[in-house]
Image (cartoon, rainbow, N blue to C red):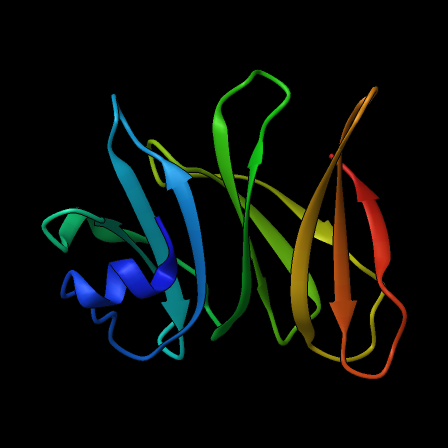
Length: 136
């Protein structure tokens, strides 16, 4: 399912600038959205309704989101802010599970996940700099 499909299904996340699609229970597709208010919202993609109250939130506006598998196989979200830190979240519970410091001097503009033989690597790119690789 593409982001265009989700928008045409009526999902209009308020103030969102970052999106990620993750697997939900069963065959459900879930859209994570975040933006200016720092809240990460999970949406049930088919009816376009909130799948869970926005109980996860950053203290700063979210600039990038990524979905990854945690070391225990659980689905996790990574959120970045203009403070150049990355917060890891348990996607099922909305609870924070850890924080990563990127060393970037400016705000993070993009996150990408690279699966590897020894686990996951998170790429964090900031304005005007080379991406940094962070092992998960």
